[in-house]
Image (cartoon, rainbow, N blue to C red):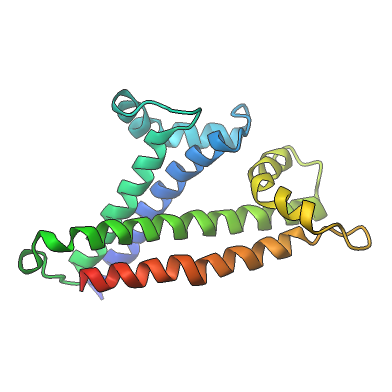
Length: 192
C-alpha cells in the first residue's frame, strides 16, 4: 500500500512538472502570446530549471530546447522511479537496459504531449461553445490551432458546426494506440 502511494505521488509530482515543461516548449512553438496569465504561470513555475539549462542548451530555430529536454528528463526520471519502486533489478540488469529506458522515457513524453493536446482541444471546443469571449479563450484557441487548423482545411463545418475537434480526438487516440503503445511495448521488451 505504501508503494502504491509513493508511485501515485511520483506520477503526480513529476507528471505535473513534465506537463509544465512541455507546455512551455509547445507555447513557444505554437507562438502563443506570453502576456496572458496562463502563460505567465507556466513560465514562473518552470523558470527555476529552464534558465540554468538554457545556459548549456540555447534555443535553436526559435524553439525552447531546454524546456523539451527537461520534460524528457523528467519523464525519464519518472520511468526510473516507478521501476525502482517496483523493485526492478537495476544492479543485475546492467547498462544494457539503458536504451530501453531511454525509449520508454520517449514513449512517456509522446503520451504526455498527446494527452495534453487532447485536453487543449477539448477545452478550446468547450470554451467556443460556452464562452467564446472569455479572456482565456484566445490562449486555448492558439494552443489548439496547430492541431485543428489542418483538420479544418480537410473537414468543412457541417451545418455551421465545426467537427474538427472530433476528428482531432480520433487522430490523437489513433496515435496513442498505434505509435505510442507500440514504442512503449518495444521499450518494455528491452527493459525486461
